[in-house]
Image 1 (cartoon, rainbow, N blue to C red):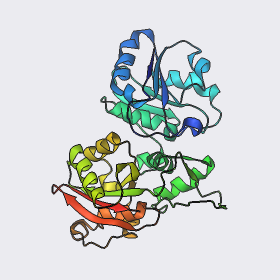
Image 2: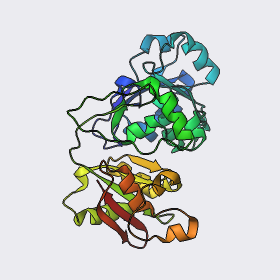
Image 3: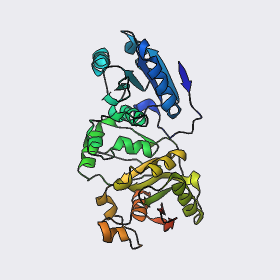
Image 4: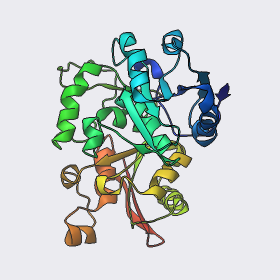
Length: 323
């Protein structure tokens, strides 16, 4: 069974050459579990370019190894581990593996957490499964560089560097991704992760965003549109949405960004303090955080400056435009 969803309008995804996200997945299921496999296709199939269902047999992983970005094993984790262990070679080339039980209770990334398995587990969470992630950045509720790459519509060029840079993420020492426009030659060390854009966004802008808890998808979309009206830019010029880690689980923000095919980059408090905006903020007085909208817009912009200071929509969403 195969479902092609190239026109689904789901969130932007990087090429699978580096295995950083999953665009093409295969659900491997025993015959008796095909109804659950079909349920998964129905529930999250529109988030992928291709989603196939393969009936399990002893050599199914070996037969299709390399043809998919991620295998979703509808089976016990031990089966998936034993049947794929001898196939594993390099985490940047191997397909990711995520297992889920028949009741859709647990979604467990086995290998390739940062290369598609965590993404699939997150998607299965929308169907009620608990994503059991053990990668360090996710366990610490931080956004690793691979996840940042996806939000920036980029991919990691030098995978070995992510060990050092993700440790810096855990220690709140990485800061925002720096931009460099060429033509230029760059000399970097082993502890510098290079992200390559998947497409040229030109002189794009960043939507720095704060909100009250529970703001809706429509409120976010309208606030972004209105903020851009005061500039020479529109939604097609937006590179990504920037916010604070304390807001990175806002359902309305995430669904609005997904609707507009935008990634979300979340900055730690320490980063935002280094890029504080010009407009006084009540949040600094009340909770010690700088104003999220302006600080995240400045931190995320290539030039670290503002195109438009913060505006507030419907007493719910605050937006600043950075460049």
